[in-house]
Length: 556
Image 1 (cartoon, rainbow, N blue to C red):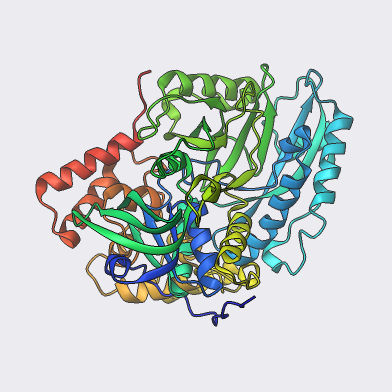
Image 2 (image 1 turned 90 degrees about the horizontal axis):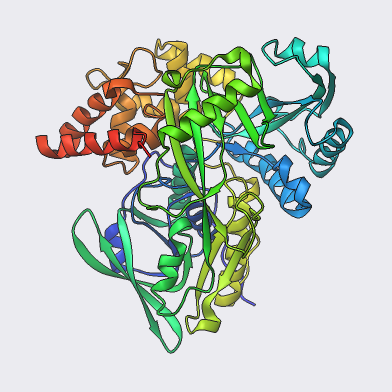
């Protein structure tokens, strides 16, 4: 058994370079298809072990399920009801690791579970479940940073619940529980930092590159046929192993192997709303009259509300909320939290995505497992091709570790995974409050801007500003009510492989996700892109129209 060489931990650069020329000119150990959180985590894991890696994404990074999520790094309390203890334990372990790997991007949130007399789950069962959740996270604070400590659960009386959140409905309230879980306010930024860290270890990465063919010789993969959608050219990428991490589109890649896909996916649609803040300081998990779970979570000064879980048979290229779905969720909010008096008109952003769940005959979308699976296509005449299906945002690093174990076995080598102790992106940072205060002082920034920059770039925030600060208007806000500045647009284009308004406004920052009414911020982003990329007037307007469509709600 030959051990792969261990690379030093290089400093993660500011840049993420679109390495198309490398894709055509070099041969790789592993080619990863898919630039969502699973794909970039796999690329990072492989590169950190010394493998030569390429990653291809046919659109923009994190443009699918990754961004359209509930933005939680959590074990999944409700999975205890289906006895998926292994999945919960894995996720809780990964929550601890991610809080240490990316402390600027992952934080903790206090959750309340109010219990009412008519809830189907009894109060004793609720407390037993919370006890088990704590047991499964027994190592939650092992080597934890002081600012990332995860408190233990608390049992609360009715008066205790109302003292914490006076707006809760008190009619029928019997008590409840409080626990803490993880949140990643911007999953797209976590994805970008994984990609930068992979590149720092030598990975060649490119977005807007579509895999259109798989070349096989003697029942083994040898190359991928790739179409560069930006440069309008075709190229061949030579690789010994291919990992299909295309998420919702994984079966499309399987279809390129010229046989019936060995796994079927059951896309499950989930919608989310962003509104004014509805609770004081906590997230809360409610049970509706139809026995559905509804979460209201603090998110960047607003409330994030979610989610639904229904099979989806529509166009995977355009998944949108409908007006009826938004109205139903608003009605559910008013049912469980009457004090909110929420109106449909107050919804700042409504977004939808689909979970790529593994299909199982006769099982509802809600009951399908969130566990992941690695499919070895060697038995189907495609040796060296692996597909990753299912999974969760939280377990992406763990999945990557298992995938690369399989890849290394195929290649006849084995190196231990180093990633659980390595910070990613700007994760090598001190206490965040100190970093924010220092940045605020050194650049005379408003607190909200300094806070946003530190939580976006971590220890790299000052370098981002130093590079951009001398350019005209660099520290001007894009919108007066939001913490984003022009320097971030330029950084996204020049350093983070952003080419479209949506890339910048929805994934390099959360401008559009916070509610860009009138596309005021989007128009500024479009004007900046026109200057930086030399767009024509028609190209600028086409990109702005695409951005507005991503923000839109369908009639039906």
